[in-house]
Image (cartoon, rainbow, N blue to C red; front, side, top):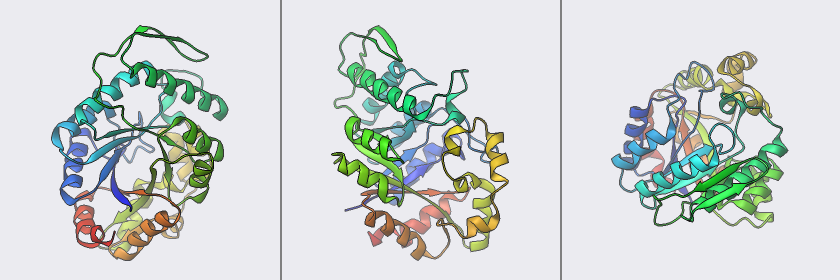
Amino acid sequence: MVELGYTLSSEEHGPNTLVENAVRAEEVGFDFACISDHYHPWTSTQGESPFVWSTLGGIAHATDEIDIGVGVTCPTIRIHPAILAQAAATTAAMFDGRFFFGVGTGENLNEHVLGDRWPEFDVRLEMLEEALGVIRDLWEGEQYSHHGNHYDVENAKLYTLPKERPPVVVSAFGPRAARAAADIGDGLWSVGPQDEPRENYEESGGDGPKYAQIDVCYAEDEEEAIDTVYEQWPNGEIAGELAQELATPAHFEQAAEMVEREDVAESAISVGSDPEPFIESVEACIEAGYDHVYFHQIGDDQEGFFEFYEENIQDEF
């Protein structure tokens, strides 16, 4: 059975709005929501990027039942894993069993801000594996020291811990990351529908939940929806590994100049007010083997999407 979720897009909405959107997502019956962890938006047009851990505290206080995950945090460069161990533990304690912790190897856009070198993928994956070891060890609640290849921790102990460890869901798009997700994670995070990451994850022994995000834009007028995606989210059409390498929103804006409005119109993004393409997008993810599918409504009209979802999509699954 599939669970349906909603994206709390930190790149497009301020912290108070994100809290309000989480409340509405719970009210209309979403099973879970995922909030992005960025230092910068992808483009300046998107316009926001609040600190996710502060926002999560507000969401924990304002909601009662909906599961919330951070999707995803890079626990390797911008913030030391010992600090993120404390942040995630406190957040999980506030949510009392409703929080899951998404992690990945990150993007240069967010991780370069302290002037650290942006390493190649193999090194980032190695750093992620070590960072998760540090985080899980600190979650044991004992005094802990670690001197590894990438991180040092001395005499650290977490005193505020949740009753149970939050699940760690690992982001993966390629085969090496998918295999790592099976080895070090409790679930898989990807963008749907993509067969290969899920296949690699399961072939490597992964048996946890599998999350897939789909970009959509509800609007009464289909052309208006295409315009919104083209103006607000052209980065979705930037192919390959470029999204992991570009350093600033200005660089993404330059890359997005190669994206034409026709590219958005011809993409797999579901747009407009006909429910069928939205439903088919979920079905495609289910057929690809994902059991948690969540909608990223692009643009300002989140309330319109909530009503559209409640009236046309929710009861189809």
